[in-house]
Length: 378
Image (tube, rainbow, N blue to C red; front, side, top):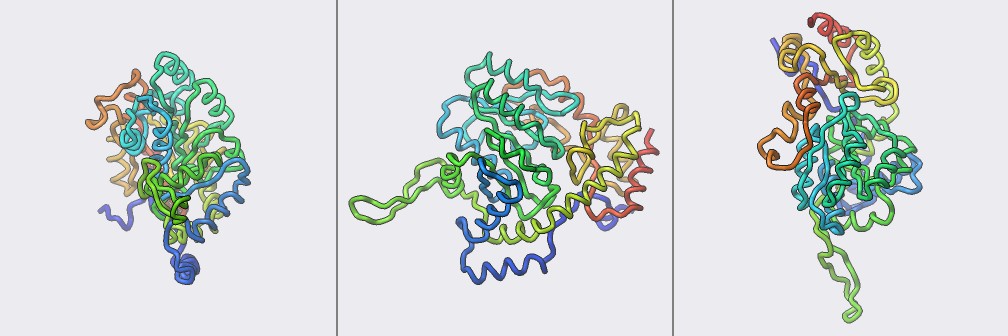
């Protein structure tokens, strides 16, 4: 019998209430609950120090979706062009923020090895279509692409790039400071590094104040020359995307465990990968278990489709799942009307790709159980 208690599935890995309590007490003492308070500033300071940031600044938001939304609103503030290029192999949020910002998504096919768009295809499409405002790239399974290559892509297409690294915070290092584009991440509890439902933007200092305004209802405060009073005025299209002090308390408590979480995930990733990398029935993303870590492993089955695999694993109390959705974005009813490139690879891969949860609390016998189920599938 399958129950939630014995089902191997994605589970949040957050700090205990005991670890969070000192930060909650600090909130009580500060009497500051939102709008870029002391714990918000402390969180930004720790992030800057961790990744040795000099050129980029962190802005923490209420969610990963809010981070994406703010970036799209920023671009909308200066661009009158129509489209944002985005892979169809992505989450609902990616298309939603584009539409909500007044743009239209233009869906791209992916490379079968990287599961991301080919940069040559992006360059070619940009040359043919002069109505493209930006490109949204998606990090797959926590992998961080070469920052310099993305910088070069931006130079060639001469428009903004938003790099959605929702699952990648645990894999960030000082190389991200070289980014000449907008980079976001998510701290949703199901991510490899979770906190509360919050997100992050890395941007150049010139965008800092504007983005902070966008996630604070779009208003700016200024002192009137005539009355000498400080008044608020809506300067930008905005919304409430602020990172509260309570969000910060959860983030800071879990941030203390950053290296412990990463080390444990690396061990689990290497263990699973070492058992399965020689299995000819499956394909893994290049570099997984070596150059980056995750709390899930994306696998492409060469012979068996996702539905059969899911049923087989469920009978063994393992909840495998498709990344994002069983349908790519361009085939979902809400998004079918939007433009797309040919989708041969996306349409094919979506049938056979699945992900296995690799929670930090997995025991050795559970790892062996997962591997034995793989071996039993023919």
